[in-house]
Length: 520
Image 1 (tube, rainbow, N blue to C red):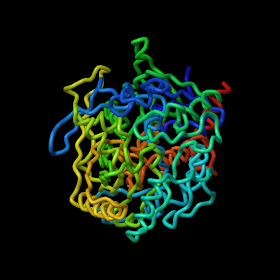
Image 2 (image 1 turned 120 degrees about the horizontal axis):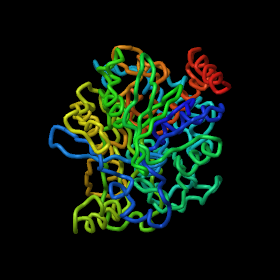
Image 3 (image 1 turned 135 degrees about the vertical axis):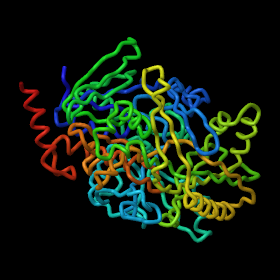
Image 4 (image 1 turned 30 degrees about the horizontal axis):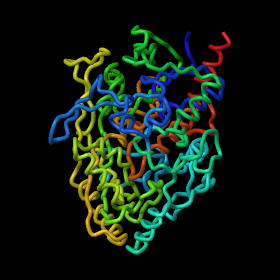
């Protein structure tokens, strides 16, 4: 069977690109490397959080070189992708994020091929689909529609952080968040247990893709194959002619074909697949495939208190401080659950760290890092993984400008925490890749941007990329909503809806061809 579209990956980039295609009546096959995440009380335990989760795997590890040491990284594989484990923060990038900023861009050539206004209708749609609750702030770009859900009441700890920010001369705002606080969708409303970041939601109150949109797309006709590892994209002339896979359950090799192929496997896995398929050689921008990796310069500043500031474990990811956004980045309220701390620290240190965190308030500092050509991924053909793919090597170092931006944010965080009543702070630097972006970026320059403005891979007319790897800059905010909005935009273009996309006639002609093929 030849499909109208094959989508590789079931995270934000894959699901949001699928939605316009499925609703246009096209035959869509989604391929996911992992399986469904089971839900229940064990989701609240240390056995199902973070790197201890069975959905985080090192079966085919990545090798990271960060200038200090070499270490192996695992990857996440499950239906819904990292939406199942994220904290729900759903920010639009600011209008200034789409404009040129020489301090960030430098000589990297990282430029958005469209502006905030082009993406704004898709931000609206993404917020509606995810049930984002929030309220406008002075730093927001223009909004054609209000938030679909009103914000929930602030917890005592959030009120404390907001008051401290004001006392420090700053303006606190609400974090827009995709969590079902009000019970206005199928499933239970949030019980504000505080276990969001790093955890699957045990009661399905977090509006992740696996609990809402994916089941709906399946009911509407999409086919989902889980436990399917895509190992190679076969190209003939200027198109992808086949998608080669391994069915992990049957331990057999399978092959699919489609008129359109969309890769949304993730910022590391997508360039891995493209390079393993040797697709860099077919593009004038092939030298940029896998390059310009960004991953935010992040750290959490904790203020320690004699009395526990949040004894009831109330939900406290509610307040952000964006006063320094256009110069350095953002601050967001974040205190990890004690179970996650126990997991991160070895042996008895875990129990000690959990007790310390229970007496803490945290502010997460997010600084946009510079896109640098030296940062990125490459494949090592001398080391093949268990699926026959070359090992992925990751190289990443922050610039002096990135370091300065983070330190400036941390100074502001300490001022706020001091106003909240602490005299002692502790710093935890985040080294993960949850906000990784940019390795197969969009852009105007056909020699330095592997994707055109419509998300199409230069050199192949039927291959698109819609995950975080497509974003040329990271901004200083959580990227999930921007990934979702861009994927909706690209999916709408492929489906032939000119009112929904950026676009042009070639996409509509492609859909006409798909329709004729189906009738035949």
